Length: 315
Image 1 (cartoon, rainbow, N blue to C red):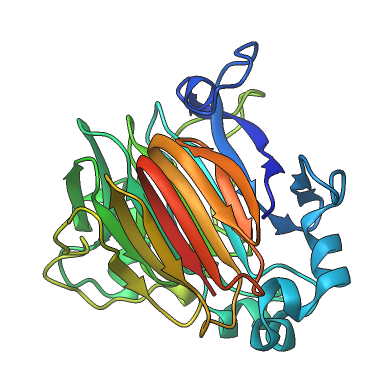
Image 2: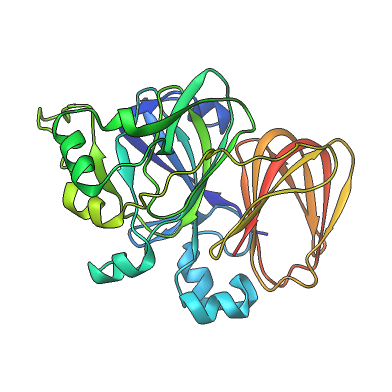
């Protein structure tokens, strides 16, 4: 089992919930993101304890290969870890944005696109996800120019436990007050569509990527972009299954043995609420809200004890 030092990202729109949630020293403000598991070059998380302490995530992948990530994942992704896990705390609306798929990203010299999901951890907030009515690429460009693009977007009041899947191409934005766990492809490519005419710390409007976004947008309209599922105690509830990751929600009140014998992949466990312990391969570690644990692909069984809610995701 591996735990990592989080990478804390200060942002103009960041809030102040990540520090106490993760039980960290609160001597910095406006922490918008905590990168929990990251193999993004220049932003790799570092093992925080145990025999591999001090090694970067991609260093672990390079050394352990398929034993860490799974043989098929290693064949596809090589020495870069395939997923990026974050906690995001927004005290202001984030920019309206879209991410390219792999094909478009490759066309523009990027390694891969970005498909992601959000698990909402609080109430009394809202976000944008998807188009609520049909628009053409020409209408899109005009609506960006005349500051009305949000009129075409589906806006949701969110509640704790809500899940939103955001495949590449879907317009979206985290709204003010949202506190979410995000699981995504390892990619930092974002096309900013609209930023509410805000200026950065130097007084400049942030760069927009109107044309790149137009190429990436999926203009299909769906009746509902929120993932429908029924939370249940003491059994996994799968909420997302896509080519890049599969994610389930666990809400445990009693011990559970989870069997990964037939799974050829790493597993990431993301603590959302409560606390307990995890035992795997003869090793026991604490596990509580705000912690993220990486299990290597060689892990066959995991025993989880305690009263806790967590996400399980794998490639």
